[in-house]
Image (cartoon, rainbow over all chains, first blue to last red; front, top):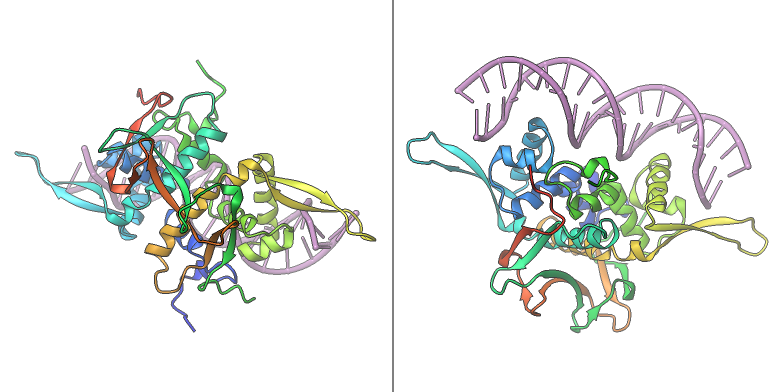
Length: 159
Length: 159
DNA sequence: CGGCATCCTTAGGGATACTG
DNA sequence: CAGTATCCCTAAGGATGCCG
Protein backbone atom coordinates (compact mmCIF):
# COMPACT_ATOMS: atom_id res chain seq x y z
CA UNK A 1 0.00 0.00 0.00
CA UNK A 2 2.35 2.62 -1.12
CA UNK A 3 0.41 5.85 -1.04
CA UNK A 4 3.47 8.04 -1.29
CA UNK A 5 3.76 7.62 -5.01
CA UNK A 6 3.64 10.70 -7.18
CA UNK A 7 0.12 11.19 -8.34
CA UNK A 8 1.22 11.39 -11.96
CA UNK A 9 2.60 7.87 -11.85
CA UNK A 10 -0.35 6.46 -9.97
CA UNK A 11 -2.39 5.29 -12.93
CA UNK A 12 -2.65 1.58 -13.48
CA UNK A 13 0.17 0.44 -15.71
CA UNK A 14 1.94 3.74 -15.50
CA UNK A 15 3.88 3.15 -12.34
CA UNK A 16 6.80 2.77 -14.61
CA UNK A 17 10.33 4.05 -14.48
CA UNK A 18 9.88 5.54 -17.92
CA UNK A 19 6.98 7.57 -16.57
CA UNK A 20 8.98 8.49 -13.47
CA UNK A 21 11.85 9.70 -15.61
CA UNK A 22 9.46 11.71 -17.74
CA UNK A 23 8.06 13.37 -14.64
CA UNK A 24 11.48 14.98 -14.34
CA UNK A 25 12.62 15.42 -17.92
CA UNK A 26 9.37 15.08 -19.82
CA UNK A 27 9.36 18.39 -21.62
CA UNK A 28 11.20 19.60 -24.65
CA UNK A 29 12.90 22.55 -23.00
CA UNK A 30 14.01 20.51 -20.00
CA UNK A 31 15.87 18.06 -22.20
CA UNK A 32 17.33 20.86 -24.29
CA UNK A 33 18.59 22.55 -21.14
CA UNK A 34 20.27 19.30 -20.19
CA UNK A 35 21.79 19.06 -23.66
CA UNK A 36 23.22 22.53 -23.14
CA UNK A 37 24.59 21.58 -19.74
CA UNK A 38 26.40 18.67 -21.41
CA UNK A 39 27.80 21.06 -23.97
CA UNK A 40 29.37 23.08 -21.20
CA UNK A 41 26.85 25.86 -20.72
CA UNK A 42 26.84 27.09 -17.12
CA UNK A 43 25.28 30.57 -17.04
CA UNK A 44 21.65 31.50 -16.99
CA UNK A 45 21.64 33.79 -20.00
CA UNK A 46 23.52 31.27 -22.12
CA UNK A 47 21.00 28.58 -21.26
CA UNK A 48 18.09 30.76 -22.23
CA UNK A 49 19.67 31.97 -25.45
CA UNK A 50 21.12 28.67 -26.66
CA UNK A 51 17.99 26.69 -25.93
CA UNK A 52 15.90 29.40 -27.52
CA UNK A 53 13.46 30.03 -24.71
CA UNK A 54 12.68 33.18 -22.75
CA UNK A 55 14.19 33.96 -19.38
CA UNK A 56 11.02 33.20 -17.44
CA UNK A 57 10.74 29.78 -18.99
CA UNK A 58 14.45 29.13 -18.49
CA UNK A 59 14.25 30.21 -14.86
CA UNK A 60 11.30 27.94 -14.20
CA UNK A 61 12.84 24.86 -15.87
CA UNK A 62 16.27 25.40 -14.32
CA UNK A 63 14.69 25.70 -10.91
CA UNK A 64 12.89 22.41 -11.47
CA UNK A 65 16.10 20.74 -12.61
CA UNK A 66 17.90 21.99 -9.50
CA UNK A 67 15.04 20.86 -7.29
CA UNK A 68 15.14 17.43 -8.94
CA UNK A 69 18.88 17.20 -8.36
CA UNK A 70 20.08 17.13 -11.96
CA UNK A 71 21.82 20.49 -11.67
CA UNK A 72 23.32 22.39 -8.75
CA UNK A 73 23.43 26.14 -8.48
CA UNK A 74 27.00 26.87 -7.44
CA UNK A 75 28.18 30.29 -6.28
CA UNK A 76 31.40 31.60 -7.73
CA UNK A 77 33.15 34.92 -7.55
CA UNK A 78 35.46 36.46 -10.05
CA UNK A 79 37.97 38.80 -8.43
CA UNK A 80 36.46 42.22 -7.91
CA UNK A 81 33.01 41.02 -8.95
CA UNK A 82 30.03 40.22 -6.83
CA UNK A 83 29.01 36.64 -6.22
CA UNK A 84 27.32 34.95 -9.14
CA UNK A 85 25.88 31.50 -9.66
CA UNK A 86 26.39 28.87 -12.27
CA UNK A 87 24.58 25.62 -12.96
CA UNK A 88 26.60 22.44 -12.85
CA UNK A 89 25.71 18.88 -13.69
CA UNK A 90 25.36 16.49 -10.79
CA UNK A 91 25.97 12.77 -11.09
CA UNK A 92 22.24 12.30 -11.50
CA UNK A 93 22.25 14.84 -14.30
CA UNK A 94 25.36 13.40 -15.91
CA UNK A 95 23.80 9.97 -16.07
CA UNK A 96 21.09 11.33 -18.29
CA UNK A 97 23.59 11.46 -21.13
CA UNK A 98 22.52 8.16 -22.68
CA UNK A 99 19.04 9.60 -23.10
CA UNK A 100 20.37 12.69 -24.86
CA UNK A 101 22.71 10.58 -26.95
CA UNK A 102 19.96 8.21 -27.99
CA UNK A 103 17.70 11.11 -28.96
CA UNK A 104 20.51 12.73 -30.92
CA UNK A 105 21.28 9.55 -32.84
CA UNK A 106 17.63 8.95 -33.62
CA UNK A 107 17.22 12.56 -34.75
CA UNK A 108 20.32 12.32 -36.92
CA UNK A 109 19.08 9.19 -38.55
CA UNK A 110 15.40 10.01 -39.03
CA UNK A 111 14.89 13.74 -38.88
CA UNK A 112 17.97 15.63 -39.95
CA UNK A 113 19.64 13.24 -42.31
CA UNK A 114 20.46 15.87 -44.91
CA UNK A 115 22.29 18.27 -42.68
CA UNK A 116 25.10 16.63 -40.78
CA UNK A 117 24.84 15.79 -37.10
CA UNK A 118 24.57 18.98 -35.09
CA UNK A 119 26.20 17.68 -31.95
CA UNK A 120 28.90 15.10 -31.55
CA UNK A 121 29.71 13.19 -28.41
CA UNK A 122 33.41 12.54 -28.03
CA UNK A 123 35.19 10.16 -25.73
CA UNK A 124 37.45 12.51 -23.80
CA UNK A 125 40.23 9.99 -23.47
CA UNK A 126 40.58 9.05 -27.11
CA UNK A 127 38.57 11.61 -29.06
CA UNK A 128 36.44 9.01 -30.83
CA UNK A 129 32.74 9.59 -31.39
CA UNK A 130 30.41 7.93 -28.90
CA UNK A 131 27.23 6.06 -29.76
CA UNK A 132 24.45 4.42 -27.84
CA UNK A 133 24.38 0.65 -28.06
CA UNK A 134 22.01 -1.91 -26.71
CA UNK A 135 23.69 -4.84 -25.06
CA UNK A 136 22.25 -7.75 -23.20
CA UNK A 137 23.63 -9.33 -20.07
CA UNK A 138 24.83 -12.26 -22.06
CA UNK A 139 26.98 -9.58 -23.73
CA UNK A 140 25.37 -9.73 -27.13
CA UNK A 141 25.10 -6.63 -29.23
CA UNK A 142 21.32 -6.22 -29.58
CA UNK A 143 19.27 -4.53 -32.29
CA UNK A 144 16.10 -2.68 -31.41
CA UNK A 145 14.01 -5.21 -33.32
CA UNK A 146 15.36 -8.11 -31.29
CA UNK A 147 13.90 -6.87 -28.03
CA UNK A 148 10.65 -7.41 -26.23
CA UNK A 149 9.57 -5.28 -23.30
CA UNK A 150 7.90 -7.11 -20.47
CA UNK A 151 6.50 -5.97 -17.13
CA UNK A 152 9.02 -6.18 -14.29
CA UNK A 153 8.67 -6.67 -10.53
CA UNK A 154 7.59 -3.06 -9.93
CA UNK A 155 5.05 -3.01 -12.67
CA UNK A 156 1.67 -3.07 -10.95
CA UNK A 157 -0.27 -3.64 -14.14
CA UNK A 158 -3.12 -5.10 -12.20
CA UNK A 159 -6.03 -2.96 -13.29
CA UNK B 1 20.00 29.14 -47.29
CA UNK B 2 17.69 26.46 -46.11
CA UNK B 3 14.35 28.03 -45.32
CA UNK B 4 12.51 24.74 -45.23
CA UNK B 5 13.56 23.97 -41.71
CA UNK B 6 10.86 23.47 -39.14
CA UNK B 7 10.22 26.73 -37.41
CA UNK B 8 10.73 25.17 -34.01
CA UNK B 9 14.31 24.22 -34.83
CA UNK B 10 15.15 27.53 -36.45
CA UNK B 11 16.62 29.24 -33.39
CA UNK B 12 20.33 29.81 -33.33
CA UNK B 13 22.06 26.86 -31.72
CA UNK B 14 18.93 24.80 -31.71
CA UNK B 15 19.13 23.36 -35.18
CA UNK B 16 20.09 20.23 -33.40
CA UNK B 17 19.11 16.64 -33.89
CA UNK B 18 18.10 16.46 -30.24
CA UNK B 19 15.64 19.29 -30.85
CA UNK B 20 14.44 17.64 -34.07
CA UNK B 21 13.83 14.40 -32.24
CA UNK B 22 11.96 16.25 -29.52
CA UNK B 23 9.73 17.88 -32.13
CA UNK B 24 8.40 14.37 -32.70
CA UNK B 25 8.60 12.70 -29.31
CA UNK B 26 8.96 15.68 -27.00
CA UNK B 27 5.97 15.09 -24.76
CA UNK B 28 5.37 12.73 -21.92
CA UNK B 29 2.36 11.02 -23.40
CA UNK B 30 4.00 10.54 -26.77
CA UNK B 31 6.89 8.66 -25.24
CA UNK B 32 4.57 6.65 -23.03
CA UNK B 33 2.55 5.66 -26.08
CA UNK B 34 5.75 4.48 -27.69
CA UNK B 35 6.64 2.53 -24.56
CA UNK B 36 3.26 0.83 -24.82
CA UNK B 37 3.81 0.05 -28.47
CA UNK B 38 7.08 -1.67 -27.51
CA UNK B 39 5.23 -3.63 -24.88
CA UNK B 40 2.97 -5.02 -27.55
CA UNK B 41 -0.05 -2.78 -27.28
CA UNK B 42 -1.80 -2.42 -30.62
CA UNK B 43 -5.37 -1.23 -29.99
CA UNK B 44 -6.62 2.24 -29.38
CA UNK B 45 -8.43 1.60 -26.11
CA UNK B 46 -5.47 -0.26 -24.66
CA UNK B 47 -3.17 2.63 -25.49
CA UNK B 48 -5.42 5.15 -23.80
CA UNK B 49 -5.99 3.03 -20.73
CA UNK B 50 -2.45 1.78 -20.20
CA UNK B 51 -0.88 5.18 -20.72
CA UNK B 52 -3.49 6.72 -18.48
CA UNK B 53 -4.76 9.44 -20.79
CA UNK B 54 -8.21 10.12 -22.16
CA UNK B 55 -9.36 9.01 -25.57
CA UNK B 56 -9.17 12.48 -27.12
CA UNK B 57 -5.58 12.90 -26.02
CA UNK B 58 -4.70 9.39 -27.15
CA UNK B 59 -6.30 9.97 -30.53
CA UNK B 60 -4.42 13.21 -31.05
CA UNK B 61 -1.00 11.79 -30.06
CA UNK B 62 -1.47 8.56 -32.02
CA UNK B 63 -2.42 10.55 -35.07
CA UNK B 64 0.76 12.59 -34.72
CA UNK B 65 2.85 9.46 -34.31
CA UNK B 66 1.31 7.95 -37.44
CA UNK B 67 1.86 11.20 -39.34
CA UNK B 68 5.48 11.24 -38.20
CA UNK B 69 5.94 7.65 -39.36
CA UNK B 70 6.64 5.99 -36.02
CA UNK B 71 3.45 3.96 -36.12
CA UNK B 72 1.27 2.68 -38.93
CA UNK B 73 -2.44 2.18 -38.71
CA UNK B 74 -3.01 -1.25 -40.18
CA UNK B 75 -6.41 -2.66 -41.04
CA UNK B 76 -7.15 -6.17 -39.94
CA UNK B 77 -10.23 -8.29 -39.96
CA UNK B 78 -11.16 -11.12 -37.68
CA UNK B 79 -13.47 -13.63 -39.38
CA UNK B 80 -17.04 -12.50 -39.14
CA UNK B 81 -16.07 -9.13 -37.75
CA UNK B 82 -15.91 -5.80 -39.47
CA UNK B 83 -12.58 -4.24 -40.38
CA UNK B 84 -10.65 -2.76 -37.47
CA UNK B 85 -7.36 -0.98 -37.21
CA UNK B 86 -4.32 -1.51 -35.08
CA UNK B 87 -1.18 0.52 -34.57
CA UNK B 88 2.11 -1.12 -35.41
CA UNK B 89 5.67 0.04 -34.94
CA UNK B 90 7.55 1.03 -38.05
CA UNK B 91 11.31 0.76 -38.36
CA UNK B 92 11.53 4.43 -37.46
CA UNK B 93 9.46 3.79 -34.38
CA UNK B 94 11.36 0.66 -33.46
CA UNK B 95 14.64 2.51 -33.53
CA UNK B 96 13.39 4.76 -30.77
CA UNK B 97 13.90 1.90 -28.35
CA UNK B 98 17.30 3.09 -27.11
CA UNK B 99 15.65 6.31 -25.98
CA UNK B 100 12.98 4.44 -24.04
CA UNK B 101 15.55 2.06 -22.63
CA UNK B 102 17.82 4.88 -21.51
CA UNK B 103 14.92 6.67 -19.84
CA UNK B 104 13.87 3.47 -18.13
CA UNK B 105 17.33 2.78 -16.79
CA UNK B 106 17.73 6.34 -15.55
CA UNK B 107 14.33 6.21 -13.90
CA UNK B 108 15.14 2.89 -12.27
CA UNK B 109 18.38 4.21 -10.89
CA UNK B 110 17.30 7.69 -9.77
CA UNK B 111 13.57 7.82 -9.34
CA UNK B 112 12.11 4.42 -8.52
CA UNK B 113 14.97 2.69 -6.78
CA UNK B 114 12.84 1.25 -4.00
CA UNK B 115 10.30 -0.47 -6.15
CA UNK B 116 11.89 -2.81 -8.62
CA UNK B 117 12.14 -1.97 -12.30
CA UNK B 118 8.67 -1.76 -13.80
CA UNK B 119 9.61 -2.77 -17.30
CA UNK B 120 12.29 -5.12 -18.44
CA UNK B 121 13.78 -5.30 -21.90
CA UNK B 122 14.67 -8.83 -22.92
CA UNK B 123 16.82 -10.02 -25.76
CA UNK B 124 14.40 -12.22 -27.66
CA UNK B 125 17.07 -14.67 -28.74
CA UNK B 126 18.57 -15.40 -25.35
CA UNK B 127 16.16 -13.95 -22.78
CA UNK B 128 18.82 -11.82 -21.09
CA UNK B 129 18.02 -8.30 -19.92
CA UNK B 130 19.09 -5.51 -22.24
CA UNK B 131 20.79 -2.29 -21.17
CA UNK B 132 21.89 0.88 -22.87
CA UNK B 133 25.62 1.29 -23.15
CA UNK B 134 27.76 4.09 -24.48
CA UNK B 135 30.54 2.94 -26.73
CA UNK B 136 33.04 4.92 -28.74
CA UNK B 137 34.22 4.15 -32.22
CA UNK B 138 37.51 2.98 -30.83
CA UNK B 139 35.30 0.36 -29.17
CA UNK B 140 35.81 1.51 -25.60
CA UNK B 141 33.03 1.20 -23.10
CA UNK B 142 32.39 4.83 -22.13
CA UNK B 143 30.96 6.31 -18.94
CA UNK B 144 28.74 9.38 -19.08
CA UNK B 145 31.34 11.42 -17.23
CA UNK B 146 34.00 10.67 -19.83
CA UNK B 147 32.18 12.43 -22.62
CA UNK B 148 32.20 15.92 -23.98
CA UNK B 149 29.57 17.16 -26.40
CA UNK B 150 30.81 19.37 -29.18
CA UNK B 151 29.05 21.08 -32.09
CA UNK B 152 29.07 19.01 -35.26
CA UNK B 153 28.94 19.90 -38.97
CA UNK B 154 25.22 20.69 -38.91
CA UNK B 155 25.37 22.80 -35.82
CA UNK B 156 24.88 26.38 -36.99
CA UNK B 157 25.77 27.87 -33.61
CA UNK B 158 26.61 31.14 -35.27
CA UNK B 159 24.52 33.58 -33.30
C1' DC C 1 24.36 39.77 -15.50
C1' DG C 2 20.82 36.94 -13.50
C1' DG C 3 16.90 36.72 -12.68
C1' DC C 4 11.46 37.74 -11.10
C1' DA C 5 6.60 39.80 -12.01
C1' DT C 6 3.03 40.34 -15.09
C1' DC C 7 0.16 39.44 -18.93
C1' DC C 8 -1.08 36.77 -22.74
C1' DT C 9 -1.42 32.76 -26.07
C1' DT C 10 -1.30 28.06 -27.09
C1' DA C 11 -0.93 23.09 -26.51
C1' DG C 12 -1.76 19.20 -23.63
C1' DG C 13 -4.99 16.85 -21.45
C1' DG C 14 -9.42 15.57 -18.34
C1' DA C 15 -14.54 14.81 -18.43
C1' DT C 16 -18.50 13.89 -20.64
C1' DA C 17 -21.28 12.72 -24.31
C1' DC C 18 -22.03 10.95 -28.81
C1' DT C 19 -21.20 8.16 -33.42
C1' DG C 20 -19.96 4.29 -36.63
C1' DC D 1 -14.34 -1.19 -30.08
C1' DA D 2 -12.54 3.00 -31.98
C1' DG D 3 -12.85 6.87 -32.11
C1' DT D 4 -15.02 12.33 -32.59
C1' DA D 5 -17.13 16.59 -30.49
C1' DT D 6 -17.40 19.84 -27.00
C1' DC D 7 -16.08 22.29 -23.01
C1' DC D 8 -12.92 23.55 -19.64
C1' DC D 9 -8.62 23.63 -16.95
C1' DT D 10 -3.68 23.82 -16.41
C1' DA D 11 1.11 24.09 -17.79
C1' DA D 12 4.47 25.68 -21.11
C1' DG D 13 6.18 29.38 -23.05
C1' DG D 14 6.62 34.32 -25.48
C1' DA D 15 6.90 39.45 -24.59
C1' DT D 16 7.72 43.10 -21.88
C1' DG D 17 9.33 45.40 -18.04
C1' DC D 18 11.54 45.73 -13.45
C1' DC D 19 15.08 44.80 -9.93
C1' DG D 20 19.35 43.58 -7.19
